[in-house]
Image 1 (tube, rainbow, N blue to C red):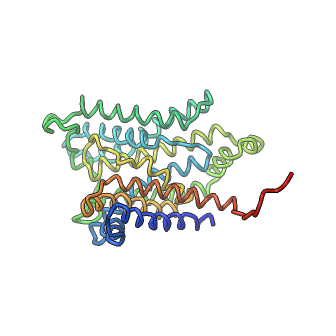
Image 2 (spheres, rainbow, N blue to C red):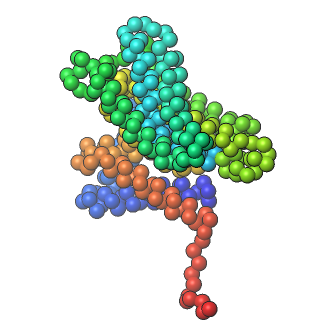
Length: 343
């Protein structure tokens, strides 16, 4: 049932999605076709699906490490932005020069920027006992304001017709394309590599085992000589590093610059992806593709049905709701009772 409930949640989301299209005055079959089939009806659409799934896989894998350690990192959106900002700083420094070091430095800067941003709630949690949920979430808005200050201020493109964006990155600061004629880049292969690394860390390494014990059973961890503080630091830094890496793949991939629309909400959507995927790398791979399809479906619904693209967020919310509802019956079961018992 632990693996069946996500499938039930997806099925219920599709069913209620069809009812939603009908209530909006659209043919349910046409609506579902535009939302789920049309976005992946050709090679370019499939490549866009993998492109959208790339940051979701990276962020979700990092969050899964933290969640397994009992660390609730809700601020991956801010860590994503800081990773993009840090990588953009390297790219702008390299400029149009043929700098062979630019791309490796951007990967390192993106991961480091996200990890440092996640280190703030980790330090406050281990030092003062503050809630990492609140601190990491509030830091999202600080990250957004920092990125806005940079693209409206010192990093603003003077030739960008007053749009909030940086200069376009040089070729040496862009990820290579995987399929000619599409936007799918090498970041997808990096995401798959991180899923494999996450599996090895969580399932095969002693450090991963110690981290999970330290986060989920602090008393047992202390008895065994494991550090619960180490579990918190590992969970937060892993989530921040992979979220920052995802931000780097966005600015070095399809965007090629830092803009005000750096994130499409990947940091928050990845929380749903991680839980639908059962905090397992293989499950995260499948749920990332489903969530990426929601993003693409929202764009197609806007074009084909004149609906707002934010309808994708409605599907995301329904998926989370039905997942929580389905999970309820893993631990509890309904029992019909004819009447109240007398005392």
